[in-house]
Length: 178
Image (cartoon, rainbow, N blue to C red; front, side, top):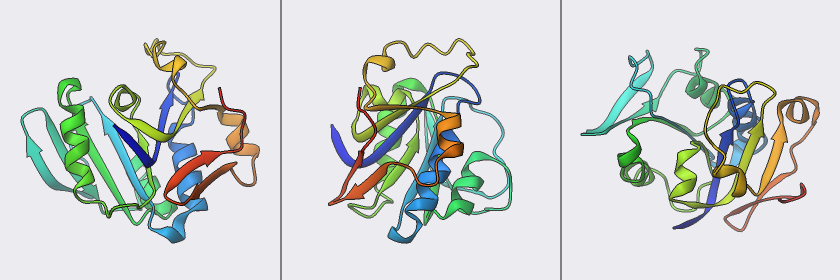
């Protein structure tokens, strides 16, 4: 399934810059109704500011409402996303949960999503892998064959503007594609 208005972000390890990259993109495109999504397979306790939108066996979907906390979804909202969704999902329910989230997003709005595993089901307009010098043994070797662009966190920190564009409903980058 191709979703051209989706920018999908994965990382090679913890602290690779996934959320920093997502927030930089959101800041750069804050005036056009950009949507943030964070999908995780970890079913930990729900934090303040998350409003339950949908719950089915294998997933729970929330909308973030609090931009003042330090969690990833709050950071996306504070960066300027018009809405931010958070999903706790088992692997076998990932696509169903994503489709449920998509029901709440206006057609054509730019979307920035942190979810490495979603790449196995969706062909996004742009797929970014953030390379980390820290590895926590995440097995994303298969995904390393699929990115359009790779960045390092230092690249993002130094850049005044990202070489990312959203035009005619599709994400693209002037970075060298892989």
